Image (tube, rainbow, N blue to C red; front, side, top):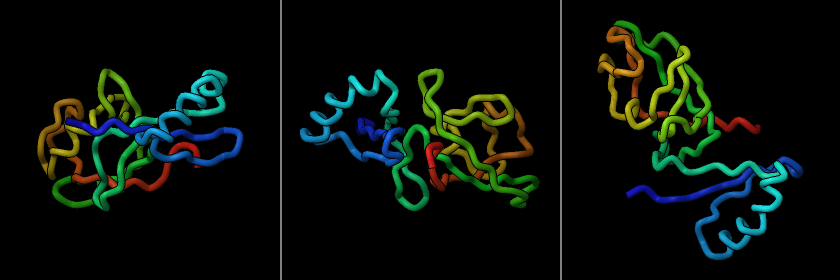
Length: 133
């Protein structure tokens, strides 16, 4: 079962508030809720997936992964993690791809949402920042 965790970006103070999973954090989260509705805080949820360095991947993170053609790394791609269609994922070439699908793919695996057998992603991801920084 996936651990349910949240963090929040404070748009007024331009800082990240981490981990609302303990009681004190939950109480702070409840107090933030009114200001969240006023757009001061952007609440982001943990995806349940960690990157190659063990860092937790949250909605709003920017992830990087190598891009391969014919078993050779040709580029690195960067994408924001979003929640859509009941899944955390990224948009690539106007298609939404779940992180869970990509995490299990290796070079030359077919990923149905990507639709290209000759080009595949390498796993795992690396968090390189977030959409707020």
